Each structure stands twice: as C-alpha cells, then as structure tokens.
Amino acid sequence: MSTAAAGTGPPRRRGSGKRRTLRWIASVLSLLILGTAGAGYLYYRHLNNNLKREKLNLGDQPMAEHKANAAGQTPLNILLIGSDARNSDENKRLGGARSTFDSTPLADVQMLVHVSADRSNISVISMPRDTLLKMPRCTDPETGEVYPETTRPRMTNESLGRGGPGCTVATWHMLTGITIDHFMMIDFSGVVSMADAIGGVPVCVSDNVRSRNSKGEGSGLELKKGTTYIKGEKALQWLRTRYGFEDGTDLARAHGQHMYMNSMVRELKRTELSEPNKLRKLAEAATRALVVDEELDTVKKLYDLGEELKKVPTARITMTTMPSVPEGSRVLPKPDEAELLFKMVREDTPLDGRDSEKQKPKVSEDPAAPDAEIGVMVRNGTYTAALGAAAGRATEVVDVLTEKGFTQAEADAQRTPQERTTVYFPSVDLEGDAQAVAKSLGLPVSSAKRSTEVSGVTLVVGADWRTGSTYPESAAEDDGKDKEETLKSARALSGDDTGACMKVQPGFVWSD
Image 1 (cartoon, rainbow, N blue to C red):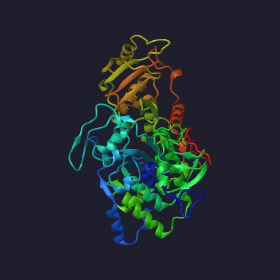
Image 2: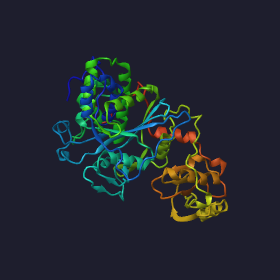
Image 3: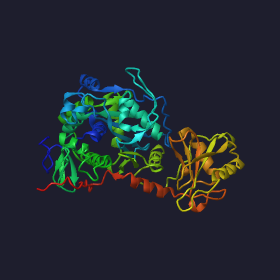
Image 4: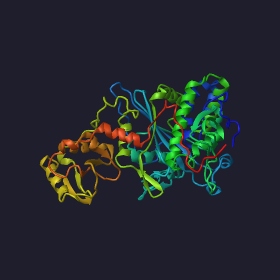
C-alpha cells in the first residue's frame, strides 16, 4: 500500500489515479493534457510507438454514421474499458486471487462517455460488471477464431475474452443501439502509473473505513472519516472497493468510481498543468498504459479528442449507472428505464435535465414503411392481480390495426403482463415503423422503445388500456416524469457536486 497518499492534506501535485474506472478516466482525462507534452518529432514518434492498437468493432453488425444536428455538429461516443488482466508481474503484484493469474482478462469496468454534438455537456453511463447480456458473434482479429452469438445471457465482463475490446464494443452496440466512435482500455498497472503521474485526488467517506471482511475479501482500502487526497495504489484500492461502500454491491463500487472521476475532473481543471516535466510524465504514462482503436492511433488524435472534452464545463458532466434489477447474484438491465437512458444518449438529450422542457420526444429520422408492409405482433399484457387479463384483448387490437391499414398485424399467443402499453422494436432501422404504429393508436412517440428481446415490431397492450380502440388520453405517459424517474434510478451525479461523500457499509467501520 502506498504511504505517500495516506495523509489528509493535499500534496503539492494533484491529479488522479484509479483502477477500473480510473483506467478510463485516466484515459479520458489524460487526453486533456497529452498534446502539450511534445518535445520534437522523435519524442512524438516515441509516444506514438507506445500506443497499442486494436480493431474497434469485432461484431458482424456495422455501426451507423452519426446524423448531424441543425448546425452540422455530431456527437462523440467513447467506450472506456478497464481490464483486470493479471498476465504481467506488475499486475500480479497489484492484487487478485492467484487462481486468476494469466487467465483470460475480463472487462471489469465499462463506461460509455457521450459528448454532445454541441459540446455543451458530457453524459457517462456505467454498466455493472455483473450485468447479464446476450453477446453478438465476434471474430478474433489475430487468430481468426469465431465466437458465436450467445444463446443465453453471459456476464458482460466476459466480452473482452471474445476476441478483445472490439467485442465489448459490439456487445454495447447490440444492447444500446448507440454508435460508438472509439474505445480506450487500460489495466491495473496502467492505472497506477497514470495515478502517480497525475498526482492526487480528494475523496470523502462518511466514517473510518477498512475494506476487508472476515473471509479476507476486499480491496484493502483504509481511510479516515472525511476527505483524503489519494493517489497510486491507494487510488486503485478506492476504485476497486466494493466491500465497505454502501450495500457492498458492484453498484456501490460504480457510485464510488463516479465520485472519484468527478473529483478528478475538478482537480485537473483547478490545478495548473503547465509544468513541462509533469506533462512529459503524463504523456509517457498515458501512451504506455492505453490500448486504443485503430482510428485513435496517434498522440495528435488523442490530443484533438482531449480538446473536444475540454470544451465541456464541469457542471455539465453527469455520471450515471445503467438501471438494473437483480437476477440471482447478478443483474439485468431494468426494463424500460435502461432503454430510456440509452435512448436519451442516442437522441443527444442531456442527462443533467437542462433544456429538457425544450426537448420533446423525437420522431425517428428513419422513414416508416407503408402501413400495409409493417408486420406487427400484438400481445395481451393487460393482466393484473386484481382484475386478471382482459380476454381477447390482443385480437381486438389487431382488428383495430387492420382497419387502420396495418394488414400484417397478428395476435401473439404469448402474454407479457405489464403496466404500460408499449411498442417494442429490435433495431433502430425499425424505430420509424414502431412510431407509426404508436401514432395510429394514439400512443405517445415515447412509447416506442428498443428491445433486443423482440425480433420485429411488437405491441404489448398493457393494463392501462384494457378496452377501446384508441389509447386513452388519461393514460398517456408523462415523458418528463419518466426521465426524472430513470435518472433517479441511474443515480445521476453532477460533476460539480463537491459535497458527495461515500457512505460506509456497516461492519467495515473502524475506531481511531
């Protein structure tokens, strides 16, 4: 454990360090400074040679180009990946069970950084490593080995072992429909080297904390109540801490990582970063630590990306965690709320709530097919414990759709009880079709939601529409309320929240 960062006062040089999220953050934030560290062409070439490069997308499904806004601007999406690889002496020294040494690396931290088209705000979505997802077919670019699409959900961190970071990118794209422009990946030793190069970051805990239980599980983090500046291995411990934070789950760890990231951003913006020696150390550490996609393969490109990130004020950075529900000891994306969060990113809607009154649900730019050519499966989801199911409801709504020109509508014998009526579509190229179905029935545009659980446009008639041929106005969903509930579930944390302090889990508190 590093002793240099254990004090409670700020060191001379400040910055950041971290392990999983740190890897990404270090990755992202190092971009803010990399460009000024040049020392001539030879040094520039040396830094470029430090970078390791891999393919962006190992899946079969290509990602669509961004659509520009009215000003001709396009958003930017970067997937930050933290690898738990323990295949070097440095990484083995930094912890983990010996049984994991030299095993297939896992993508234990995954964060999508969305930079808005107008560069006014940044939204970050973390995905818990224990999330169960279906994974696409991926091909290893080095060996040619093909990993078939999974038939059952697998832990999302396993995606890295299916050919490399490009499969993690493909898995995110399959789930979210978000176009991903770049990825950056870093491992344990890279996190520590970046943390030491940058300096220290202030973090806060509600009580004295020691992350170690009776079974020996935990990161080993030990901090006193209040605010402490941490760096190096201490920062790595913070970012790895699960036992000792809040409820001891991976969701708590993600929240602690968000606090750290926001604090690091504030420190970097506040601290003078003009020292040539410090910048050289940062450039050296960052380029040695990072694995990037082939389109982000030079220091100049990293610097240009950093310049885009610098345009966003701290107050407009919002950290979130994908809403989830328990599935045994794992989690699944929370129906509706996770998809709404992804949709807000796809539509470039700020997650900090600003301008939300001006931004109404967007009509898809992908034109709908003629009504008679749109296939629609209709399911009866009207069941409630109090009323049971409205018998024959799917067939009734099929008749309504047929009268309106959707002649390929048919009833599905499967029943999917749910509160709200929703039109699901599997991919963004069918969003226009789903919205056309919703509009014909009087449903709000926002009732059309993407889901990988359906193979075509699927209308689930919910408990809010048990009778009638037109969706009742009284049941029309309040889009603003939905967004507010989703962001609350996602634990949105603003970059300028200086009062954030990690709650310590009972049983992990120690006395002075």
